[in-house]
Length: 294
Image 1 (tube, rainbow, N blue to C red):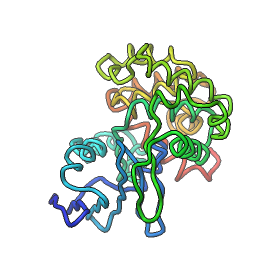
Image 2 (image 1 turned 120 degrees about the vertical axis):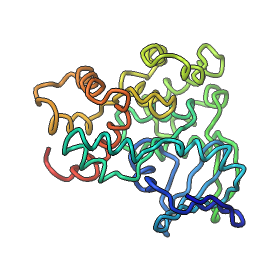
Image 3 (image 1 turned 90 degrees about the vertical axis):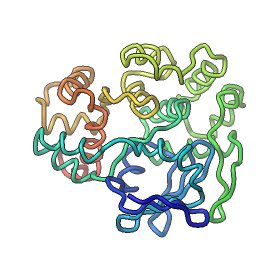
Image 4 (image 1 turned 60 degrees about the vertical axis):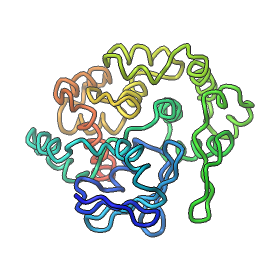
């Protein structure tokens, strides 16, 4: 793998296990949009980035090597050997074999903890296009303008202070519906440091989950998503309707409806790679099998 900079682009030749569609459309993030040329543009850590894959060459536009090493290398989880993970999971059974092939370029992003808390509170009983619209609205209304790319202005995610003290009409206009009180409460908890969400990374998974579930609007599934996508805890297994369907189809009896038991079954089966296995299965179920009756 060769890494170098050309003008305002960072280029990585011979990249492995990196497919933008699999990464940005697997339900883990809500601030990346597909461009007409097939690339994806998004905002993370207060920076605007465009990502394009041409063969086995990854092109990161609107950045430099300093920011790559400081931000994007960790954000895209570049130190993790996804080839080895896929090989291990694929050996377990034919379903994971198919899922890891279908989502072969997926990576778990290392995202900002507070942004993930709010984003997944918004996600409760919600569809991805609506989540993305709400997050974009709040960012434009309350976040700092950070620049322009291809003629479009981009905004940072709002701070805990901005969200906790904003006018209620902003939350109403963002279409977050019944979640607006949860968003305000969670933002105040972080702003006032009643809980430092960033420090939960240092706790064991069960303790971090227990703390997260004291936040209004954070239940078992949302807490597991925060643990996985915002705190780098891979021994979790978030269960939503798609995961429930794929687990019923491939692994457990359809009579098992208890989401907690399904989650425990997944963790027992996939151990410290439960979260990564869940993402392969989720993406496979939603994209590949979603049009079929399961």
